Length: 421
Image 1 (cartoon, rainbow, N blue to C red):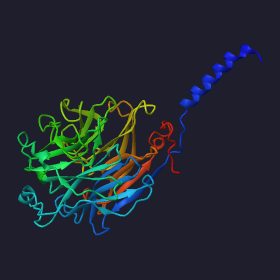
Image 2: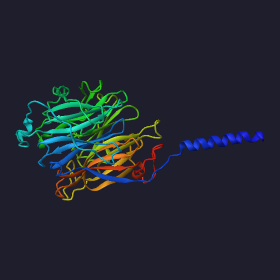
Image 3: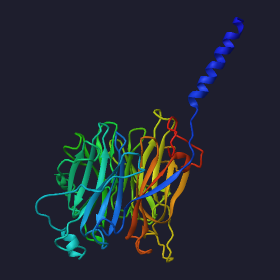
């Protein structure tokens, strides 16, 4: 053997192994859609307000408001859940998960505006938070006036009895004397510290639909849901920030929590703020020029984070549109809910260089999750029962797609090889 060749062989071997470790297996781009809840079926006129999470074991939970009528947010509404054990391809039976015993009364501000009828029961704004220990925490509201907590330890097969946690919201009253409360909607997050964080909004109930004016904040738990505490006001209703409300959250790679807020501000852009602990010391809110605001709920989730993956990736979804078919677009006013799109950021929300349409037609509220194999799951409102009313959603649909589809084959998750199979 020629010993002089050994260093060269060692060098070639090192180069080969290094290149192999950096090789990312790509899959064929794909996009699948399945309707999970359809208007007029299962004795409900409408299904709205989607939320979705993936559990530690890989079960996907999709939940929503099931409305007996199409008259708005204050009628008879239940909270339904469906489970998928194959990454969102097929779905189990519907389960009603919100039941509060004892007397119930309509919110007085809704009665004052003749938005509600005595005797109807409104459960609203379900929010789930997957826990790293395998549990899933759930919050929901009753009559936009009370909030309850429950949990599941078997991926949504059974749930604990609801426990009222409205006392956490009562702590806001000295600062903001709310008459309407709401969680999320969408999903909450668990921080690396274990803290559970749920975005919330609060309203004085004097304005339109008794949901205005409003401010945003969070409630959080440091003992796995046993007790809940209010955070500081993150989105005040003042100056250029008009009526902040429905909010999504994500933890950034540096540990900060980012809130991404819907508002009715003249900028017609999403409003962002950050906190070191997800509860206090919120930064001055800033509008993000790339994130259009047609005045609609949005979704946000982390797809990957270095060094566990090759790079940071955040996802954002909402109707990417500022047009109105009637030509009446005006600053701070609602725009047509259509063109639900998913955006991708590689720098923790500073820029969003990738944006792709999932549903070009009517499409409204949306939430995002990631299956354990890296498949992206978008749960969103699609179509209309009458073809024109944005509040009469035709179906709640799951769109399943991979990073290859989102980036036109320019990016893939290392080690995932996500695809249809």
